[in-house]
Image (cartoon, rainbow, N blue to C red):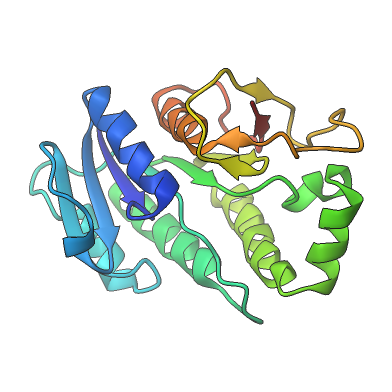
Length: 216
């Protein structure tokens, strides 16, 4: 399949591209600075920003006769008051996906987003509630709402603390991450493991319309 990736120039996004190409998929990556991403066989790079609807449309039409059939998002959200980078990107994506008849999207969020907030550590709950980190989480919370109302086959992965370790077996801890205890999520999950799960999520229907918390 051809997969459209937003956030392909980030640490996790680059691993998603490598993982998907290894599995024989073709990739269209929408990024602001195409020169920052090395050229690879099977990778088509489109210059643009996901907060601009016309750039999303250009990415869908970048390869004539070969539309993306799934979308993976590994964007991050700035810690700025009122930020809507993730929200605007997903609103633009949902509209474009419906125009082109694409139904599958997998998005990387974070443990602590949405219904999993109650199950993260007390320190993290305090930080989200009292620091600029909360602005980023509010943006992710809005994405939860957008995708759940979209009618699409979405998967929102909520990884624990991200690490640069090697790919390892993944624990799936339900939509809320219950049962991790007082040190919930501190062990973390490698970005390589998350990348693999994101590609799994668009290949399979196992986690459709769910928001699993994941950890190594």
